[in-house]
Length: 136
Image (cartoon, rainbow, N blue to C red; front, side):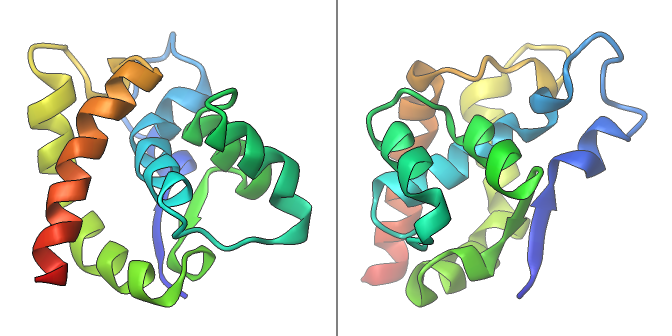
């Protein structure tokens, strides 16, 4: 049950801008979590059903979901077994580099990326490619 990331690790860091809400520390995590949810790779815990449906309908972002159901913690046990193995291999080693390349660009901080579905769509295309590479 590896904890792959936690929003509190970010909002408690020196790099986290003081004027941002704590949820900004979960944006990058939430994009990956939303990808897992939208691709049927997230556990279907009964307590999460309504919130999972909101993410699927794009009425709730992945970061909002993560903050609500797990206080910002991303644990691979919340995923299906195949996708957990992918997350454990990809997320800590290459995900942030992809996220920075695709979404951060010239922003002064990783935490300034807008938590939007438009940004999600950009990073999701990259995660899809990475997932496909592991399946071939």
